[in-house]
Image (cartoon, rainbow, N blue to C red; front, side):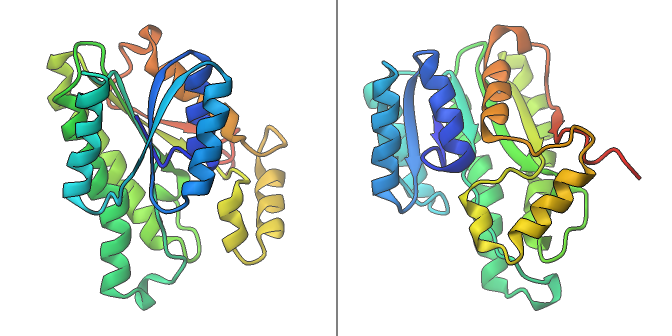
Length: 241
Protein backbone atom coordinates (compact mmCIF):
# COMPACT_ATOMS: atom_id res chain seq x y z
CA UNK A 1 0.00 0.00 0.00
CA UNK A 2 1.24 3.46 -0.92
CA UNK A 3 -0.67 6.34 0.62
CA UNK A 4 -0.54 9.47 -1.49
CA UNK A 5 0.76 7.17 -4.19
CA UNK A 6 -0.66 8.78 -7.31
CA UNK A 7 1.41 11.95 -7.62
CA UNK A 8 4.93 13.27 -7.12
CA UNK A 9 7.22 11.19 -4.93
CA UNK A 10 4.40 8.79 -4.08
CA UNK A 11 3.86 8.07 -7.77
CA UNK A 12 7.57 7.39 -8.31
CA UNK A 13 7.45 4.93 -5.41
CA UNK A 14 4.37 3.21 -6.81
CA UNK A 15 6.00 2.82 -10.22
CA UNK A 16 9.21 1.42 -8.74
CA UNK A 17 7.28 -1.18 -6.78
CA UNK A 18 5.26 -1.95 -9.89
CA UNK A 19 8.48 -2.76 -11.76
CA UNK A 20 9.04 -5.46 -9.14
CA UNK A 21 5.53 -6.76 -9.92
CA UNK A 22 4.12 -5.79 -6.53
CA UNK A 23 0.37 -6.04 -6.09
CA UNK A 24 -0.45 -2.46 -5.24
CA UNK A 25 -3.17 -0.56 -3.46
CA UNK A 26 -2.77 3.16 -4.14
CA UNK A 27 -4.49 5.69 -1.91
CA UNK A 28 -5.37 9.14 -3.21
CA UNK A 29 -7.34 12.02 -1.72
CA UNK A 30 -8.96 14.19 -4.43
CA UNK A 31 -7.44 13.95 -7.91
CA UNK A 32 -9.01 10.84 -9.43
CA UNK A 33 -7.85 11.73 -12.95
CA UNK A 34 -4.21 11.74 -11.86
CA UNK A 35 -4.73 8.53 -9.87
CA UNK A 36 -6.20 6.76 -12.88
CA UNK A 37 -3.25 7.88 -15.04
CA UNK A 38 -0.89 6.43 -12.45
CA UNK A 39 -2.87 3.19 -12.42
CA UNK A 40 -2.57 2.96 -16.20
CA UNK A 41 1.21 3.37 -15.94
CA UNK A 42 1.36 0.64 -13.31
CA UNK A 43 -0.69 -1.78 -15.43
CA UNK A 44 1.59 -1.06 -18.40
CA UNK A 45 4.47 -2.35 -16.26
CA UNK A 46 2.64 -5.65 -15.77
CA UNK A 47 1.63 -5.07 -12.16
CA UNK A 48 -1.74 -5.30 -10.44
CA UNK A 49 -3.19 -2.16 -8.87
CA UNK A 50 -6.30 -1.01 -7.06
CA UNK A 51 -7.14 2.61 -6.31
CA UNK A 52 -8.81 3.72 -3.11
CA UNK A 53 -9.94 7.28 -2.45
CA UNK A 54 -9.75 8.19 1.23
CA UNK A 55 -9.32 11.23 3.42
CA UNK A 56 -6.68 10.00 5.86
CA UNK A 57 -7.86 12.47 8.50
CA UNK A 58 -10.92 10.23 8.83
CA UNK A 59 -10.39 7.03 10.81
CA UNK A 60 -13.50 5.42 9.30
CA UNK A 61 -12.15 5.91 5.79
CA UNK A 62 -8.78 4.47 6.84
CA UNK A 63 -10.47 1.35 8.17
CA UNK A 64 -12.43 1.01 4.93
CA UNK A 65 -9.21 1.30 2.94
CA UNK A 66 -7.58 -1.51 4.88
CA UNK A 67 -10.77 -3.51 4.47
CA UNK A 68 -9.98 -3.38 0.76
CA UNK A 69 -6.70 -5.16 1.56
CA UNK A 70 -8.60 -7.88 3.40
CA UNK A 71 -11.08 -8.33 0.57
CA UNK A 72 -8.67 -8.47 -2.34
CA UNK A 73 -5.25 -9.45 -0.96
CA UNK A 74 -5.65 -11.12 2.42
CA UNK A 75 -2.47 -9.64 3.85
CA UNK A 76 -0.15 -6.66 3.61
CA UNK A 77 3.63 -6.85 3.20
CA UNK A 78 4.62 -3.19 2.84
CA UNK A 79 3.07 0.12 3.85
CA UNK A 80 4.64 3.27 2.41
CA UNK A 81 3.16 6.35 4.03
CA UNK A 82 3.73 9.12 1.51
CA UNK A 83 0.51 11.11 1.97
CA UNK A 84 1.08 14.58 3.38
CA UNK A 85 -0.36 18.05 3.46
CA UNK A 86 0.97 21.41 4.51
CA UNK A 87 0.43 25.10 5.03
CA UNK A 88 3.17 27.58 4.17
CA UNK A 89 2.78 30.09 6.94
CA UNK A 90 4.59 31.54 9.92
CA UNK A 91 4.00 29.59 13.12
CA UNK A 92 2.77 32.68 14.96
CA UNK A 93 0.17 33.27 12.22
CA UNK A 94 -0.99 29.66 12.06
CA UNK A 95 -4.62 28.98 12.95
CA UNK A 96 -5.74 26.10 15.15
CA UNK A 97 -7.65 24.67 12.19
CA UNK A 98 -4.50 24.68 10.03
CA UNK A 99 -2.52 23.02 12.83
CA UNK A 100 -5.10 20.25 13.18
CA UNK A 101 -5.34 19.75 9.40
CA UNK A 102 -1.60 19.22 8.95
CA UNK A 103 -0.99 17.20 12.12
CA UNK A 104 -3.96 14.93 11.46
CA UNK A 105 -2.98 14.41 7.82
CA UNK A 106 0.73 13.86 8.39
CA UNK A 107 1.04 12.32 11.87
CA UNK A 108 -2.25 10.93 13.13
CA UNK A 109 -2.86 9.19 9.81
CA UNK A 110 0.57 7.55 9.99
CA UNK A 111 -0.23 6.12 13.41
CA UNK A 112 -3.63 4.84 12.32
CA UNK A 113 -2.33 3.38 9.05
CA UNK A 114 0.67 1.75 10.74
CA UNK A 115 -1.57 0.17 13.34
CA UNK A 116 -3.94 -1.23 10.72
CA UNK A 117 -1.02 -2.38 8.58
CA UNK A 118 0.81 -4.17 11.39
CA UNK A 119 -2.28 -6.21 12.23
CA UNK A 120 -2.19 -7.62 8.67
CA UNK A 121 1.55 -8.21 8.39
CA UNK A 122 3.54 -11.38 8.88
CA UNK A 123 7.20 -11.50 9.86
CA UNK A 124 9.18 -9.46 7.35
CA UNK A 125 6.57 -6.71 7.09
CA UNK A 126 7.81 -3.23 6.29
CA UNK A 127 6.45 0.18 7.26
CA UNK A 128 8.17 3.16 5.64
CA UNK A 129 7.33 6.81 6.27
CA UNK A 130 8.46 9.85 4.30
CA UNK A 131 9.86 12.77 6.25
CA UNK A 132 11.91 15.80 5.26
CA UNK A 133 14.97 17.69 6.40
CA UNK A 134 12.61 20.38 7.68
CA UNK A 135 12.01 18.10 10.67
CA UNK A 136 15.19 19.37 12.32
CA UNK A 137 16.08 22.49 10.37
CA UNK A 138 14.18 25.77 10.51
CA UNK A 139 12.90 26.68 7.06
CA UNK A 140 10.91 29.92 6.62
CA UNK A 141 7.12 29.35 6.63
CA UNK A 142 7.66 25.58 6.78
CA UNK A 143 7.06 25.36 10.52
CA UNK A 144 3.93 23.26 10.80
CA UNK A 145 5.14 20.84 8.13
CA UNK A 146 8.52 20.51 9.81
CA UNK A 147 6.94 19.97 13.21
CA UNK A 148 4.65 17.28 11.79
CA UNK A 149 7.59 15.53 10.15
CA UNK A 150 9.55 15.61 13.42
CA UNK A 151 6.58 13.88 15.03
CA UNK A 152 6.55 11.29 12.23
CA UNK A 153 10.21 10.55 12.91
CA UNK A 154 9.60 10.14 16.63
CA UNK A 155 6.61 7.91 15.94
CA UNK A 156 8.82 5.83 13.62
CA UNK A 157 11.17 5.05 16.50
CA UNK A 158 8.39 4.13 18.94
CA UNK A 159 6.63 1.92 16.39
CA UNK A 160 9.93 0.26 15.49
CA UNK A 161 10.56 -0.86 19.06
CA UNK A 162 7.01 -2.08 19.59
CA UNK A 163 6.75 -3.94 16.28
CA UNK A 164 10.26 -5.40 16.07
CA UNK A 165 9.33 -8.51 18.15
CA UNK A 166 6.72 -9.29 15.47
CA UNK A 167 9.36 -9.17 12.75
CA UNK A 168 8.08 -5.87 11.34
CA UNK A 169 10.55 -3.09 10.60
CA UNK A 170 9.65 0.60 10.66
CA UNK A 171 11.86 3.29 9.15
CA UNK A 172 11.62 6.78 7.71
CA UNK A 173 13.33 8.59 4.86
CA UNK A 174 14.23 12.23 5.42
CA UNK A 175 14.45 13.69 1.94
CA UNK A 176 15.97 16.87 0.65
CA UNK A 177 14.29 19.14 -1.88
CA UNK A 178 12.76 17.28 -4.82
CA UNK A 179 11.42 19.41 -7.73
CA UNK A 180 7.92 17.92 -7.96
CA UNK A 181 4.65 19.72 -8.77
CA UNK A 182 4.16 20.70 -5.12
CA UNK A 183 6.87 23.32 -5.62
CA UNK A 184 4.48 25.19 -7.92
CA UNK A 185 2.80 26.40 -4.73
CA UNK A 186 6.00 27.98 -3.43
CA UNK A 187 6.79 31.61 -4.30
CA UNK A 188 10.28 32.07 -5.80
CA UNK A 189 10.56 28.30 -6.21
CA UNK A 190 13.21 28.47 -8.94
CA UNK A 191 15.48 30.69 -6.86
CA UNK A 192 15.07 28.48 -3.78
CA UNK A 193 15.77 25.27 -5.69
CA UNK A 194 18.83 26.84 -7.28
CA UNK A 195 20.20 27.83 -3.87
CA UNK A 196 19.63 24.27 -2.65
CA UNK A 197 21.43 22.90 -5.68
CA UNK A 198 24.40 25.21 -5.16
CA UNK A 199 24.68 24.20 -1.49
CA UNK A 200 24.46 20.47 -2.23
CA UNK A 201 27.92 18.86 -2.46
CA UNK A 202 26.66 16.48 -5.16
CA UNK A 203 25.90 19.52 -7.31
CA UNK A 204 22.32 18.59 -8.16
CA UNK A 205 18.90 18.07 -6.65
CA UNK A 206 17.52 14.78 -5.40
CA UNK A 207 15.00 13.05 -7.67
CA UNK A 208 11.76 11.29 -6.80
CA UNK A 209 13.11 8.17 -8.51
CA UNK A 210 16.11 8.07 -6.15
CA UNK A 211 13.78 8.14 -3.15
CA UNK A 212 11.73 5.38 -4.77
CA UNK A 213 14.84 3.22 -5.19
CA UNK A 214 15.63 3.52 -1.52
CA UNK A 215 12.05 2.70 -0.56
CA UNK A 216 12.40 -0.42 -2.70
CA UNK A 217 15.60 -1.35 -0.87
CA UNK A 218 13.97 -0.86 2.54
CA UNK A 219 11.09 -3.06 1.38
CA UNK A 220 13.38 -5.99 0.65
CA UNK A 221 15.22 -8.69 2.60
CA UNK A 222 18.60 -6.94 2.71
CA UNK A 223 17.13 -4.21 4.95
CA UNK A 224 15.83 -6.56 7.62
CA UNK A 225 18.20 -5.24 10.32
CA UNK A 226 17.53 -1.56 9.61
CA UNK A 227 15.07 -0.67 12.34
CA UNK A 228 13.74 2.62 13.65
CA UNK A 229 16.08 4.74 11.54
CA UNK A 230 15.55 8.11 9.90
CA UNK A 231 17.76 7.91 6.83
CA UNK A 232 18.74 11.20 5.19
CA UNK A 233 18.74 11.37 1.39
CA UNK A 234 19.84 14.85 0.39
CA UNK A 235 23.06 14.60 -1.60
CA UNK A 236 24.92 16.05 1.38
CA UNK A 237 22.88 19.26 1.59
CA UNK A 238 22.71 19.16 5.40
CA UNK A 239 26.45 18.57 5.89
CA UNK A 240 28.07 22.00 5.31
CA UNK A 241 28.06 24.42 8.23
